[in-house]
Length: 411
Image (cartoon, rainbow, N blue to C red; front, side):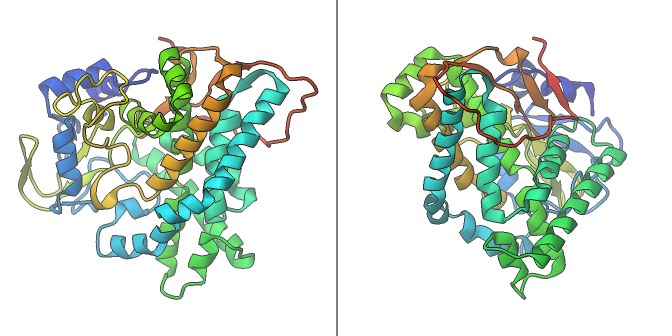
């Protein structure tokens, strides 16, 4: 990666780095391949990013060798129609609005139990490790049926994958091998002991071949649960650091969905879109692309584009600007967006109802941080909790400490 690209995604803070703001003002397309091999461009403006995500001339499958190697096993996000359409259709109903709404009571019960456990115990706590992460992972795994024996490995691998800062062939091969091994083990376990879950249902379908099954299992467990947990932590951090916003949402909880959308825009955990490859000569963002050239977009920059979003560096609940690109756009938009939004709505709502007893103890620069090119956000959120008499800490189990691409902020 070029030093300029590193600088554009540096910093342990909410919002968007100053370097991305500069690039968006001055350079809608930035070449980031170092001048060798097929050209790779980073797009910085929303209009160009949205156009890229919906342009059928841009493929998710590289027609020639790419400047950046694949960094995971084959997934739904990395294939084109008609295969993409068929595989997405196979699981889409499970993540529809109606299906997710049926699960909302269970998610609300989980949120209440996790937070009430913190309040009953009192003292110091970590909202990320003890609330955001278990809330997001359990909701996802109940749907997919990920066996318990693989859950910690899945979280550990996801941290390493999302925290990657060097997409070298060796690093990418290691990441892909680890996930492929996990996918194969999960499929084998569910064949031996099926349940009432999505993986078992897919295994029972004769129209889903083995290769497609692996794609779907990988897609369901790669990063959405952890990114949702980090996004919830980002939302809670925003509230803890803005007492006026916190007070308003306490008084008007009906505004929680608007607040969630604004945090998704203001502080997106995904940092870049998936790459697209030109299938032939074309022009985009003021540059001429040739067959095999790669384009991807900076999501935080696109979300802060002043052209369609006045005062982008302010949190406002009255926006009428276009929906952010945090969950993507077009045919490859995030399959789990409804579930993620529901988790965020429930998580923020549960926090608001109990926030009078929770106090943050650190700012963004002091927090442990997931700090990769694919994702950025707090993976620790220490708070002090007012104690309650006779409290007993529930046995919630533990998740592995994040590693690889994770650092504590210094600014």
